[in-house]
Length: 70
Image (cartoon, rainbow, N blue to C red; front, side, top):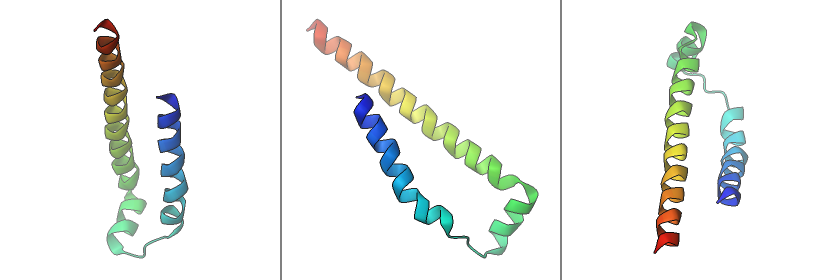
């Protein structure tokens, strides 16, 4: 399970690098960066993803425990 999580994280970072290096020249993005709102959006997205990952890990452990009991 740990290998799967590490592999998923590595793949995410590998594919996100080209996307992060491109800087869009849109007014909305510039406005959000200048106001500091973009950091709030990123923090919320990271919090949601972290919660989902933790939930799935916890669920996997519970299922594995139930399978061992049967």
